[in-house]
Length: 269
Ligand code: DGL
Image (cartoon, rainbow, N blue to C red; front, side, top):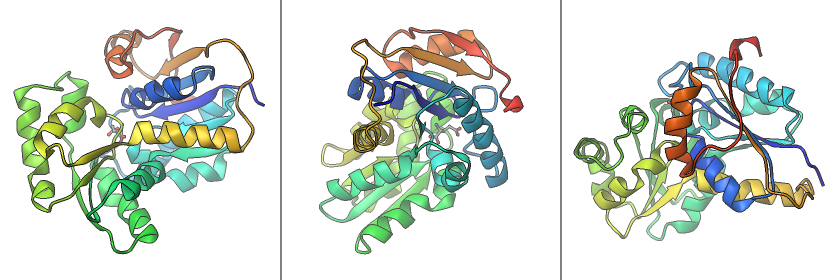
């Protein structure tokens, strides 16, 4: 038993799609969320910068005495997971392994599509993990750098979103994948548009939802679930304007943000 909070971070708002799933899977657990809204996006930055930013984020969560860290960012999970594990005394769970395992379980024709930020796709992390587990699976990946700004500007189901989706996903669709990993935690907001384009026969894997299930397994196996009878408490920290986070964050979370939201200076950590 461990009544400390779960630490979750992302480059910005996207990680809230994972938080939503964690709240659903583990309603009694408390969560400390950090969104690096002042330095988003991470996906187009160099490996060195992503590692440096991730260290700040992890140190901040550790200062908040969390019992586990969920890396709710496809880019950080792909590029900096081993560096984070090196500095963290508590378990670290990333989205890449959880989503890859779910995709391997889902595919029937052994053709998996992977979409994510440039950082995620260029790292090759998803492909490596999938091939390590099953060398017969073919992967088709595509960086979708316009998806994050689309989502951050509220374009989920619009014509613009449809056009960009078609441009990015046409080649993946042509390759006949039956499973598509949404390898960035912003992308579940585009799920309807992506599903419409890919068709009903393609299973979409939501990295945030998969990491929530993996987190539950880690808490149960490590015997570190909370034993409180009350609902979990939530605190949110950001590195830029609190107002923008509260408004748009509610859309990612699919509920009003309850709990304090505070701005911090992440460079200090
Ligand atoms: N949420 C981040 C991810 O999952 C994408 C945003 C960014 O580029 O920072 O990769």
